[in-house]
Image 1 (cartoon, helix red, strand yellow):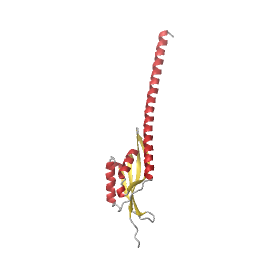
Image 2: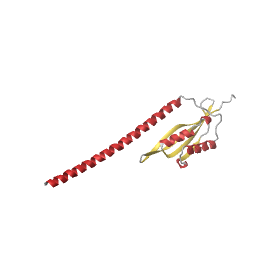
Image 3: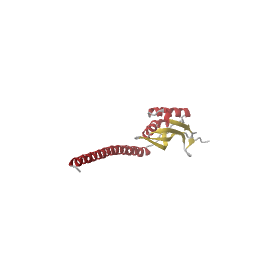
Length: 173
């Protein structure tokens, strides 16, 4: 093997090592960015958890009258707009009849809302928009299903239960 052949092989080896080092370095940068994003999300989730713990101890408010079904449905569409969601994400809204909460002076009415292909951030924004102390409305239950990942975006089908609690004293008769 001649000296020129050895030099060519050495140069090729150095180029291959350089390319491998470059790929390794870019992969490290990508993983570092992903780690930073995950830390940011973790911080946000911890803040949300703290908010939930704070709200658990906060007294809730009940409305003085039950809203009509069409008023509640209008409220849902308004909240969808406030949350910045397209109406096509809203699959169904199914109100139930008001029911007395055990033997108390309170009534509860639930509306089941189904969303298609929403991100967790969009669902949280909708829950915030639906909450209203003046009318006793809040999202009581969330159920996520059918996760779908499109690049970095993860979407879910979601079922929410919007509940309105009203003060309705029992009659003495």
